[in-house]
Image (cartoon, rainbow, N blue to C red):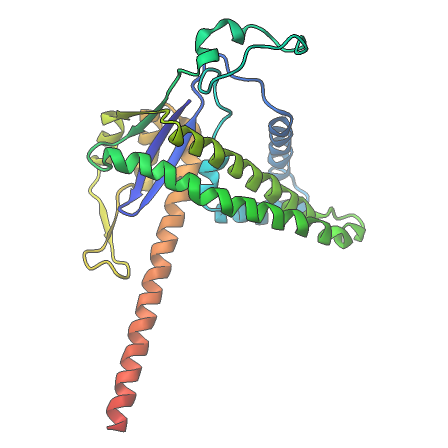
Length: 289
């Protein structure tokens, strides 16, 4: 298991957690169900049925609106054996495997989690603080919305009475329950890793080289006289994924960059509207005088 911090702009960070265990833990029931649902969804995307095409188009748009911080927390894998102290098998736990208990590291919890970051873009204390802030912010947020989604799911039952059309809102609410639960679980694990000082800082010059391949793009936003710099571009995503040896993160990176650009655009529009209001008030005050 390792954690990678990728600066998107001068004020935005994307945290990616990768599984690096040589002997990964077997997937849990919810992970197997999620994988099966992904296969069904892929079939729907290639379907010729009109309502399946509409549903997948709407669903993919809804997925893109989910915060990239939530995707980061959802992607936190189960802790590898040896990260935290484990207790020897009791006599009544005969059904558990004993291979892991032969490893002293599994009993003592002496393993650490590498934290990779571009050293000239992020300082050491900032790297650890980014992980801490993501975990502490995600814990109450995702627990709250997990409960709200759980309450809202039964309210969609009347839709199930419509013939020939599945209860899509209900399925989406159940997905949001699972999504918030996964993010909440990931936030708990990251917080424990930080609190128990399990992180090992590893500056990555291979990642930093990718950032220096293109000049930062300056975008003006409110309360930023010098402008906010987009440190990563879509054209660099493929190269960055190769540098991290993680081709699967390209979609997540493109989604995060689009969300950051959207936030900057909204803030810019808000700033322009505030300027227009100020000008209108000045004109009114001038006419009144």
